Image 1 (cartoon, rainbow, N blue to C red):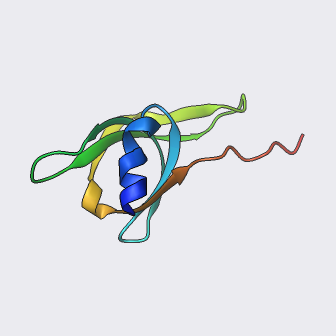
Image 2: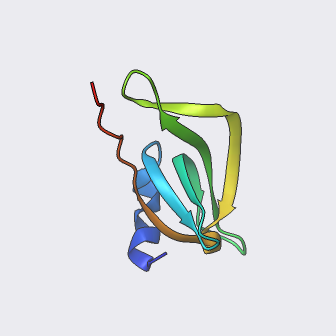
Length: 84
């Protein structure tokens, strides 16, 4: 991820984002905490998905962490448009 994207991470807490990992995975997530200190900077998130009411919904109850070094790119997630 670029230095600019990394600097923006704290402002994205509680927002829907797409985390692209260095392995090529794309995770739609709500960032809970960014810990950008120490030997293993990381962030904590929950996976989310579009809900039936047109908002983001949590995908289960588990939370996850990922090392910042394992994030290749981060961008805001956009809800798909409804076909109704």
